[in-house]
Length: 228
Length: 287
Image (cartoon, rainbow over all chains, first blue to last red; front, side):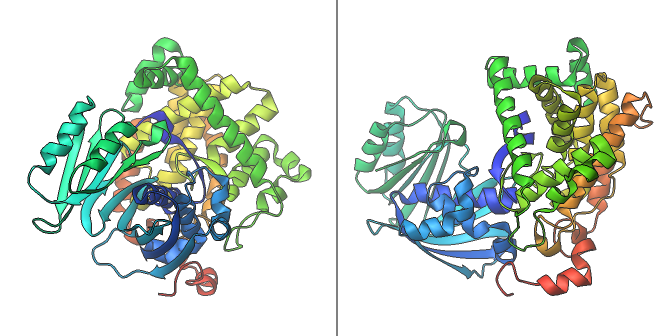
């Protein structure tokens, strides 16, 4: 915790968890999806469900999906901007079990027809966690430079992917792997000490059995997305 | 700089908490201190804009319950009556209302308590002509104090009630104000202790769970508490309890606070019949 965590962040009100955190979840969902979102079905749970309108949680989530940052004054008009930009969004009351009080589930589709499903929680003070992607368990905070790969679970994938990261002279700080079943869809989340470049993202995307690669650049350096 | 005692030890050699804190942050980021100060100056500029935004008379929150009230407080005859305090209260309410109306603010330390620090500092600047650099020093002092409270207790209303939110912000603002007016680091720590002591037990009871009522008015109260605490310390009244002990007491009280009074929107003001009957479930889905 540093002094700018205490005096900061600069954000659109009214709530770090219900507004700023929601905008970050939307932004990361956009980066994980890749491309321009055209359709979003968003389920809210707990305090998100009970207070979303007063806290602007809906506007923040949609603003994030449109690529806005937590301090973007357009957040408050994001529902209208979404209509202009061709993003059709619906909200519903989700029914979840054992979920964090500020949880959102969403299904988002882009112009290419690619669709992702995710569950995320806003854990306080603007901190967030993407907890699952396409039904596979994960834990993405957005603090570190993060590579997210979905692939078919076959022997040697960790070595193949790790080899490509090593070839770019990058150190892997944390690695998380989960899968639906042996040989099924799997997800790998790699937090890096350095920054990945597009060449690495392209090489990873070209590996056999890799379905999709997303890259989340950490907050401090400005959040940008890469994909393959 | 994990406790107030450690902050004071660091501040002793350079003469102020603010200067010691700015140097600490620059060293932590591995950058020149000028860069760190420039970043805080930008933060101050956002604070100033948020006061201006919040003074707009036509401002309204989604619920329609707050917005436009700071403009009433800021009317010349009302500000003149209460002087610096009147101006600080108007500005604190302006920032808090701007936040409630989805304006751009600096969380300091939270969004719910964001009015207190800019309220007292910007009013002091207008009344007494302090430079932006002096305010930047004061903001670093406030941040160092807030960080100690966050590390030793909590700054979350859900964990410690409003004493941890507006109480902490008042403590930060009191220390900042004390240094701004030339108080020593020890006096600034006393100012923080007085402000925090006077906020002990304050519960977090937002109506409908929204950052509106009583939150925006608690920002006004926090600004007043901060100024009173700074006056006590600057006058040389020693706080009988060291700041670190007041912080520990705040944590103990927070731990003992029932769940219904910790940001759940169930108790306190949130349970008052006239508001909770009218507003039930209007700001989310029907349950």
